[in-house]
Length: 591
Image (cartoon, rainbow, N blue to C red; front, side, top):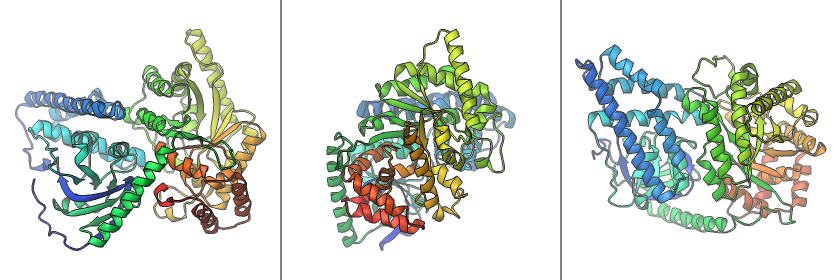
């Protein structure tokens, strides 16, 4: 392992990164560089194109074996917790369109297989990186990882995963296979230059309970082996060569967190009730089938939001009815009778499909997205509805329609759903004839019309991420206005209140499934509004349960009445923060 040529840092330096997995990591750095090839230095032309094509096919088989070996190791130690992640990576190696594109590049440019792989996969990863949506942007790292693995295989380079002693692994990026191939008992934390909260490596770090932080300083090219590091997986703090005083402070914080975590999960099977015995339903938001295990481990009562876009985006094409059916069936069966709310395809805005079916727009958030796209493409819509309906016989399933802004859209959806149900009857395919249909309340129009819309649907799901964006006329992906993007804004809260009241008046269920549902300071306010169904990231459920079990409903209702008289975002948020601080210990670890 080559040392960096940069000067070794001796004094304590504190940097701010992005926390992606909670916990405190402390120990020496281990600089991991699995890919150190400069493609531009390779010979540009080759004489034997057929030989390069054979080498490429051989590299595909080798990388597939590597992923299968990593998957087997994962299943041996962690059952099938991460199997879906490895399956999604292997899917790239079975994508005939992608593989043919690389082969055509070898033939057309008469270049080496390594150069063709680098060129084509760099173009693919760049496409994803330029998307605004965080989830889809982070899929680029899977493509970059595939590129690196294939180039290493083509050039006969083996990667060393041997840790001789406990250390914090520092890398430009980490793949799921990298995460598994290291000895778990010797990993103290992960520090990467690239990645995010929804990257596969971050998902696995959380599942393995390994602290992880992403930095934007290219520290993998600056730090040295044995530099001492502290990673704060709560705040994102990165401390290089800390003083003894700093070490003691974080050792205490680490001890306190472990004690808190132990107490938190001792109570995970306790009922989710307030101090005055009001039952609250906690459900999970998921994007992948493998996240069902996270939902079950954290005692989710069901899946409140099953996003289906990843199946479409990762395949970069429209999956068939059978592919969708198998995917939905897998999730539904694993939930063993607990409800699964499947949201139909929500493309557009910051989720764009690389296909001829979709057209780029100047303002996609206000354009051809979600239900507008599906109503204009009934064949795509009907295929998905057929798959969901067929899977509905394996559990308790509900269908959720995103971005609705009018009753007309609901009526059109119901007409299409009725047609699809009749088609299935004609085909003698079983489905749940009483399946419930709901709409997302995430536009001002839907919130204003909520009482009317409640006459046409079985339930509401409030999406506060988009609702905040549209109420405030503020792009939630624009860093220039991010400081003002706040769901505690009184206008946004008024729309949330309207939606909850409308659902109660018409006696239908209402769930809040945006990130706001997991904010400790938001939970008492939402309870005070009358909300009883919360859907969130599976890893937030234990903390939300702790908050709810610490609250008295009468006090929450009093807080809401007090908040309703306030006029500014800052005073509302401050009042909610003070409310939870007075009632809940260890609030820092619930963030």
